[in-house]
Image (cartoon, rainbow, N blue to C red):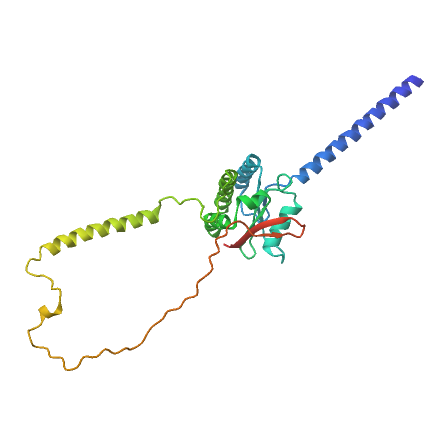
Length: 275
């Protein structure tokens, strides 16, 4: 009887012990999942479910491959907090960034005032300089303006990928070293005007050659009757002098990234605008 009781107590103890370990394991997994914030937070609900899934896959793939977090966050409002400070704090307090430098780039969209802001940290500051940020924004902000958010966010992520790859070569894209534009519509338009101008010169040259009865004269005397003009007085009169003075602007082409310190004490680069 005592043996049976001991066996039951031992069995009960093992069940309780297993339950404790199971609960502990679930708790650990829950904490880990909470610590790993998503690289896409669409708080303003700008994307469909399928667009969110596609964009998150792109953000995760680039981030893991480059070891630099690429993050997109949308909110309805920053609740009175300056958009730059909000972006920096969202990055810091959600634990984004690889390594000791917390390398990463975050794009924040606030719909309240239609603001966009890019916050950079660690290697993100090196890869995306101030000039690079201006270049990238010129490629995706137009998509945001027309409401094509999925295309704009995707373009942002792909450009970050390109800029990080370039920075890994030892020479980041910066002032005087930005990506070369493809020969697109503007180039074709200039070429068309140049060809048309050359053709016009050829045609007018041929027409000019056919005017055999007309020839230009080098001096006005050839168009006047001889001795028909008599000058009675000849003076040189100084009227005025016009001097145009312009201030010479300082050339600020130092490149690189201006940085600041966030409320958590992290160093960030970044900047933004309206869309």
